[in-house]
Length: 118
Image 1: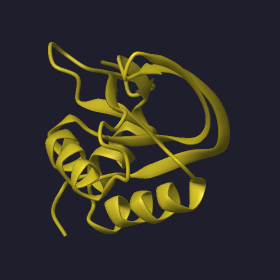
Image 2: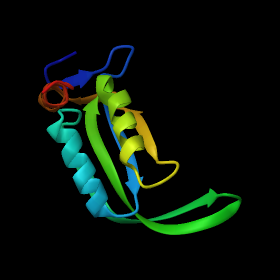
Image 3: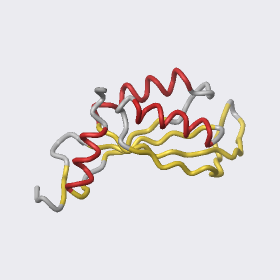
Image 4: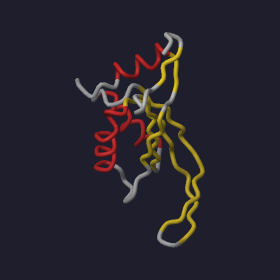
């Protein structure tokens, strides 16, 4: 691994977690709590996305908010647990995507910021 690019070995070190919610205010509060607890380094919130999905046998159309949370793999289980506890949906969108490469400095910042310990 060069100093210019950081890559995960076998297991992803850095992940992006995506969450949808009925509104951006809920996501802002939730993401701020995750950052305060050092479970996430940062979050990007898109206040309005159009979603189409099947729920209870019917096609649904909704406007939701969408967050991408930058964090360490070691924080995922706690993020998922807290999100399920607080989320207004019965089944919440919580997905993790592995980051396979990134700038050395940025990956290091995420790892130190999202350590899971306060």
